[in-house]
Amino acid sequence: MSTIVNCPTCQAQVKWIKENQFRPFCSKRCQLIDLGDWADENHKISQPMQNNEPLNEEMLDALEQEFLQHNKFFVEPE
Image (cartoon, rainbow, N blue to C red):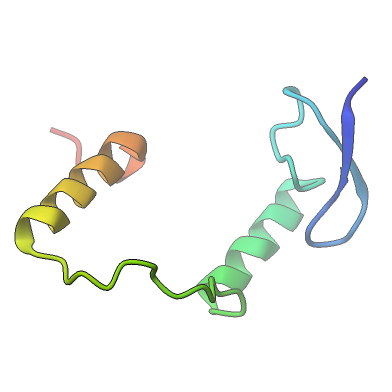
C-alpha cells in the first residue's frame, strides 16, 4: 500500500511512489510554483542556527565540499 500525501501547492492527493517523479507535488507545474515561492522568499526556514561558534575558512571549505559532493549539478564541467 502506498502513502498518500497532499500536494504542498494545490493540496491534491498524491501517491508517494517511486514512479511519481514530482513527489510530493502532483505535477511539474506545482513543483515550479513552489520553487518560485522560495526564489521570491515567500518561504523561509525560520529556525535560528543552533551553533553560536563562528565559522572559520577551514569550516566553510569543508561545508562547501560536502555540499558539492551531494549536489553534482553545481559542479562546473571540466
